[in-house]
Length: 131
Image (cartoon, rainbow, N blue to C red):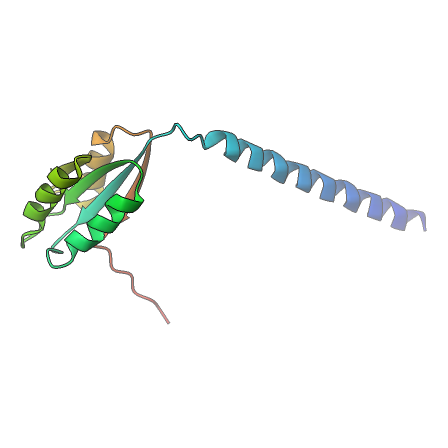
């Protein structure tokens, strides 16, 4: 009987420790997220001239922060459209990556951003579902 009480006491102590740890992590996350932090949205584009205007319009309206628009070597009019939209929104920077890899283009865009946090939005990415 004594062993059962010890087990339940140990289990209660472990549960208390877990709840306490989760509470502290939540508090830390809350402290890290301040309203004063600036956010840059890096938008990657390749050959999307037919739909980039609508998509970027939505992103510009929803995003509260800096826009860094990156053309990944488009063969259509995407780069010109990005430049025109950057002028329209006034808070956007346009980078043309040319022959850089996607990773190099993202690294340059992140370096060009003025904000303390960066969100990368890849409009050119395609995901395939397996199975």
